[in-house]
Amino acid sequence: LEAVKDYSELLPKLAFAYQVTGDVKYADVAYEISLALGQWTHWGPADVVSCATAVGNFTVAYDWLYNYYMTKPDGEERVKNLASIIYNKGVKHGYNSSFGKPCEFPKTSGDGDVYNTLTTYVNVVSSANMIIGAIALAQYDEYKTVSADLIGNNLQHLIANGLDQYAPDGSYAES
Image (cartoon, rainbow, N blue to C red; front, side, top):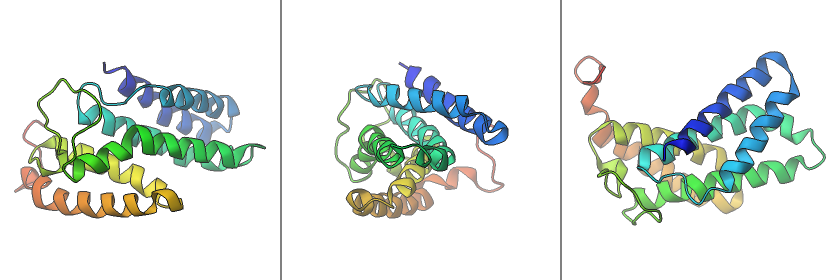
């Protein structure tokens, strides 16, 4: 069930390869993988971290390839479709979880439904990646309110609940 994370991890690598080489084959493959990931039922079958990581990876590639996509005849449609995928497969679930609503997909771990009240790495990883997704969506009227609410809520809970684990010297216990 980690496959969505594995596939999403290809996206920033392909976007980076395009940025460095200018070779459109990397951008085109990233777009095809993005569309395929958009067809998945959900991005969080195992836990919220899988979903959030996929959101972060997908969004970084979306951002790095945005200008390339906009050069295409269907560029505006492409980026709106990708934004819809970011919202429906990730940010919507992050928003619901952030405000105590149950996730819409089954999970196999004990992370709980509300990731941003946890005092573990789950809060840090999930909040940061959901914030990245929400920032990318904030330009669209239909996502503006959810994006602003998610960003504010996740930043507040990240500071209140997620960062103490790095005290006193900035290191995480597992590192």
